[in-house]
Image (cartoon, rainbow, N blue to C red; front, side, top):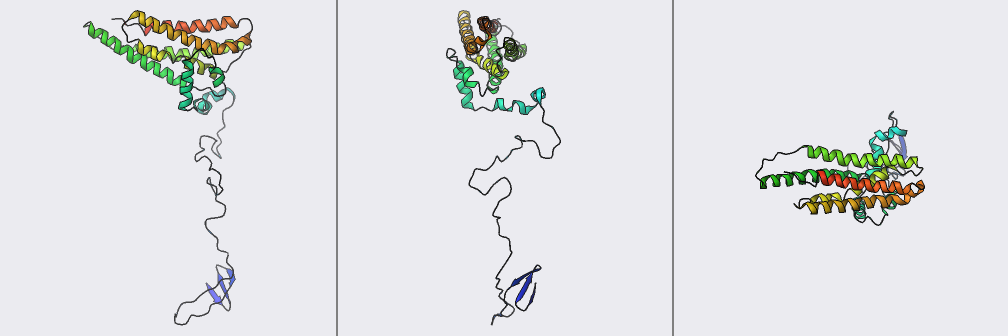
Length: 281
């Protein structure tokens, strides 16, 4: 810092001022600045993701909502989107309350309003959770019931791992293959429906079999047939009524399509009764 006359130079900037000496305080001076270019902190306009305005901040982490800047990676398009995780993310964007509400609708099959409620936001989380729970319940309850039956009759019991693999193949296969076939059939009859919406409908239609499998522990064969029949009828009615209004656009053959859907769902209940609801020793 250099001083001369009535001017003081600070960092190559000239600022007017005076430097009078203070008596009684040797070695100390007082500098009065009439102008300064010092920067004030914090800046008047904040930089970054947190803005200085009163509005809400942006998403703190938008890593999964946009591609990385400067990246040469191209986003998949067309059919290639089906092989990316980002393509399926919206179908799992549901709250617990939404899933519970849809489960409740599946237990009241005569409304027929499930497809309308889920038309704008079908999900795959509920069907995936229901199928996985069915596999666990079928394997655990089947194992427990057979174990108890063998012990009562003093017979040797061995764990059957095929029960898990068979249940997984049945439930996952049914909830994927049947809606896919129906999607192709409806497209052929000029009454197309969304594939994800069909997967959602069939997935929730299987929920009724979870309590039905739990009731199969009762060692009464007639009671098990009644439980399987009621569960199958409710599930078939739920699917048929929700697709009836849409399939009517297929023309005069809509009745045959709805009847086939209903009978196929009943056939699933019979298969479950014969292989999961029946305990043999």
